[in-house]
Image (cartoon, rainbow, N blue to C red; front, side):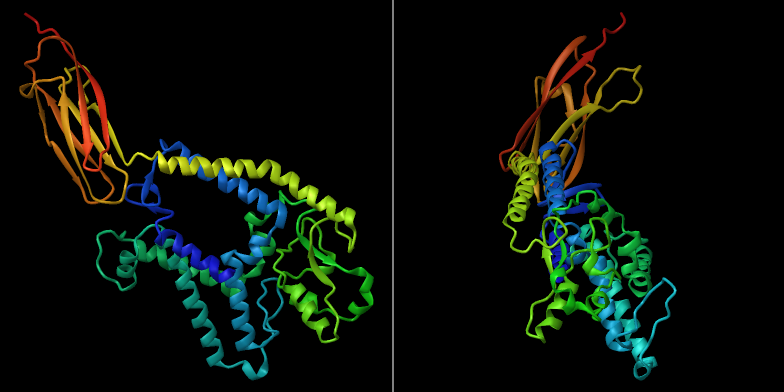
Length: 410
């Protein structure tokens, strides 16, 4: 699951599902620039994600931290490398406890190899955010130090800072962040109840647990899995459940820990407890699922009704006291593909205006401003004309302009 989440974080921008165009300053969904005017896309996606996350938090608690969070994934990976190269008691802690390195593994080669592994992991993780801002070809130019006009001049310095931050995090902080510093985990706590997924302990078999501290030592957050509460550091990763199962399996018995939903006490075989839990889940689905489906429907409708192009006409003059004779015809291509559009005017004679271009070509998404000059030979009064734009793929739009000509002094 953890590896899949990291791959998904890369595949999302690579597939064009979601990324950011730093030049246009716009979000891009499925190779479409998303403007605030695309209300259904913006609000639908937000509503669907927010409702789905609230439902997930209330059902499985902070399981996101244990199963999907990149911070936890890197910390676990760093722990495995540390235990393998420096010994199983070589635990990193910034709480003041000294690292206990195994005598046979306290060698410069092991320390150097661990440092290189952590550095490589930091460099790879720091590359992932770049995929949300640049296409793969540009990232390859960045990695190989090739010149590319699409790259920001200071990007290597920014990347180096991110690498340093991640390296310090997985080298010295690790799960301390999860226990005491993560604001996102606190946010998830706000949706937990007594029915939320948690670790349950079979207290009726407490004699099998005497003088055994294996579940405690397997918990990298330093809590007792037998005494979990609503608001604790548990992230439902299941490491303690797996550790207890493996230990008890050697005795031919099942583990004393398990995942459970419901009140935090032993309810094995209690049908009333099962009914209560199902009712609680159903109640949460009743108010979150409709919002999630509504948001998804709005998002799909936003994609169907999406306007690939945008037309606007506005006055180009800055001196409002003088007569208006120049206009800007702003044509935008919001889709990241080539496009060709034709521009024409209706309501004015050919000799009454000058349009800088009658055809516009786009290599990709962008905006082109055309200059429209109205000649001064028009008679005084209000003149209405229409700017029409048509694309080769069948899109049409028009913009009506009211042009006023003042009466000339005699």
